[in-house]
Image (cartoon, rainbow, N blue to C red; front, side):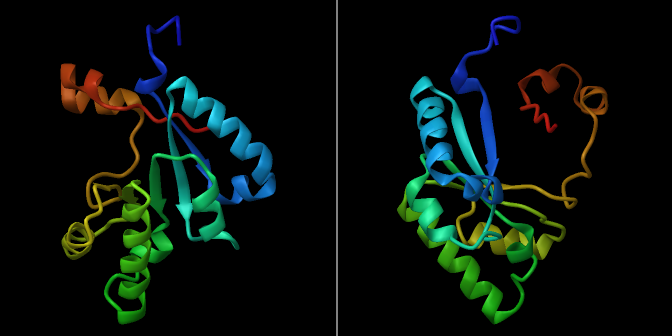
Length: 150
């Protein structure tokens, strides 16, 4: 971080629900330390684990990324009910919501209607290497977030 002049609040770290479930107490401890340091924390793939609700209640995260398996069911009644429930829970806990796997204008509208703050998916773009983002957006690309996955 020092090398690039970054502060913790400029970085968002994601933890997948399945990884958090492997060692919940240790994950909670590490995430709390990161949160206190100033990092933004996101719980990714929400809804794919066995104890999503207790996980959501116990981890000190700022953002909830709704797994695409839920997002893609926005058109049927059961899917809509699940999404409404997840959105209500997230908002009641003061979390920002991200919908993963958004691929159509109808899905964009449905997520906006639920109050989901951020959307990601092929509707906007396929995943791109940083170099391509920089070419597309020129000097504005410096203001975009860069997500690095190992």
